[in-house]
Length: 161
Image (cartoon, rainbow, N blue to C red; front, side, top):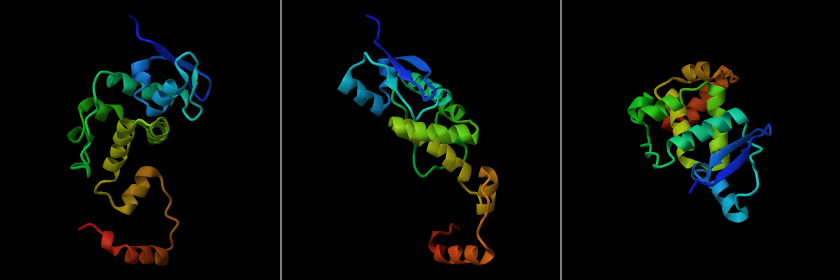
């Protein structure tokens, strides 16, 4: 018997037909299906089509398996050393897409995808100075030297050696 397909509608109104077992990797969609059934198109107004495609790719990859837990704190800044190769390649994305994927994973309640994307961000921060982090993410330093010194003093306890 063929698996039931769900119709997921992106923010732009684009429809994706997805196997129920894949779509239900999202706790949000699973709850919607349990509450309303599978006949209606499921609107996902907070997820752009391009991002929904990435979410579906991830869910299909793990359709018949459970994604591995990511050990925290990360033992390395090299993603291939902390997650399977497919996962590491999956999150090799432009920053903007990675951030949108984090928002979508959070909205759709896909904890393993959220953890993976956050681990990628953490790997980009690991071992970097504040100035290197600012360069990586194009963050402007809007602190005066005095404010920066005050923040450093207040947070001395958090300094890593």
